Amino acid sequence: MTSKLPLFLNGEFVKSKSKKTLEVTNPLSQEVLCQVPCATKEEIDQAVLSACDAFLTWKEIPPPERARLMMTYHALLKEHQEELAEILSKENGKTFEDAKGDVWRGIEVVEQAANIPSLLMGETLENVARGIDSYSYVQPLGVCAGITPFNFPAMIPLWMFPMAIACGNTFLLKPSEQDPMTPNRLAELFVEAGAPKGVLQVIHGTKQQVDDILTHPDIKTISFVGSVPVGQYIYKTGTENLKRVQAFAGAKNHMVIMPDADKQRTVENLVGASVGAAGQRCMAISVAIFVGKSKEWIQDVKQEMEKVKPGPWDSPESGYGPLISKTAKERVLSLIETGKSEAMCLLDGSNCQVEGFPEGNWIGPTLFTDVPTSSTIYKTEIFGPVLLTMNVDTLDEAIRVVNLNPYGNGTSIFTGSGRAARKYRHEVEVGQVGINIPIPVPLPFFSFTGWKGSFYGDLHAYGKQAVRFYTETKTVTERWFEGGDSEGANLTIKLK
Ligand code: NAD
Image 1 (cartoon, rainbow, N blue to C red):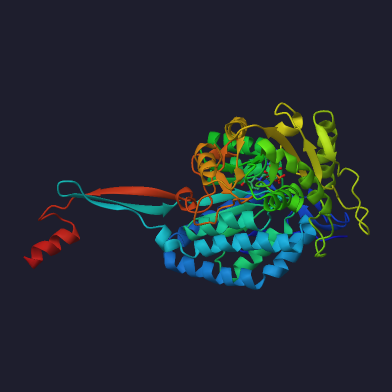
Image 2 (tube, rainbow, N blue to C red):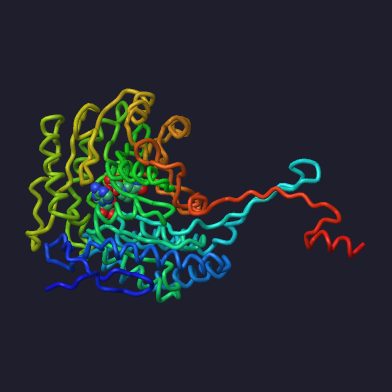
């Protein structure tokens, strides 16, 4: 009998009263790692109540003290980076190197949260009119909630709660039910760092628990990262319930390859960005557009893809790990089958086996060429190690294809020409643009800016702008009269 993962309520890990549980399985072997409870409505209410109580005292803690908590947390996360990565690899399947990167990208956000006093500073303008000065304060909102996906179980929860809490809010996290052990360990370390009771709550579950969050009257903001249909649902339901919502959704990221690019570097980068992490990255390159003569490199891409071998998380030979679940594998296999009637399948990873792991959710690198933009495989986010390619004659045509795509998370151009790079950067309608960089994920002192169907909400956030999402700006317009009754004015009179 495997253990039931606890909830984290009011500063304590407690056993859920829920009778409904789901299994968390090791994607390599299907071994059940633990049972994850689907929290009851009463437990969610209790979490929100405790977060509301904690907010009253936490918001009064000076920002430099909140920053110090983040510094301690940062040090602990660094100390436990490998341990966290091991938990993460076992429940998610990604390689140990990838898992360490997942934790590290989260640690970088905590670093930014430790810098909160300067990020929370308001604005001032003297003499907005003659003798009148104006200034603004930035104040926390209350209880914020976060709903996170399976593919970055450390980084994405860490995008959210450290920033929100450093701003003076309290936070309720609902991590993915597919790999919830890593977020629970993040919460344990937060307690060890000295986080006061109630500032962070972790509840587990699926749609019902998300609905309870979306409709809870005392939750002020929702941060979501996940797929497009769920992102749209969360945005609509959250805003209908008059909450502030930011929803980062799915993607179909294109790389444009110009004939003047460095061939070897382009091919290696393209293959790593498309099949790395089994293609389960929102910033994975899933479409390559070859411009002009660069189409001759497609055979080189195939050869490079054939060299990448999936395998277990703890082998340095593994190019990537298994897919998260049997269901995810079945879905990707079905899309590969569909693709065979829509385009040319140059490399088929459907029958992939890895020695010693017959039960793993394996799919080998898969390559389609001459993919039409009307096809299902082009229009769907596959979220597997599958690369689609197409050929066009000019950069203008490539830009048109990318801009007509409904998603706009990330894109990249490989070229030797500064002029082509500048044109692409300027004209492409996508949030993150890489120039000779395949996965242009920004660091947290910039903002993560998905465009079009990859983002719903009014603030592009997780880095710099996150502070503005988790706070309310109050503008004060001020005028002082001589002889008035405020302390400042009296003091002026006495001094006279
Ligand atoms: P998902 O949408 O299935 O699940 C995300 C979260 O929503 C989970 O916590 C889940 O429990 C919850 N959820 C699932 N179904 C729900 C429903 N019907 N109603 C309410 N809540 C529901 O996503 P996933 O499969 O865990 O993650 C992969 C997706 O996330 C991909 O589409 C990927 O592109 C996207 N993603 C986007 C970004 C980004 O920054 N834009 C980053 C990482 C992942």
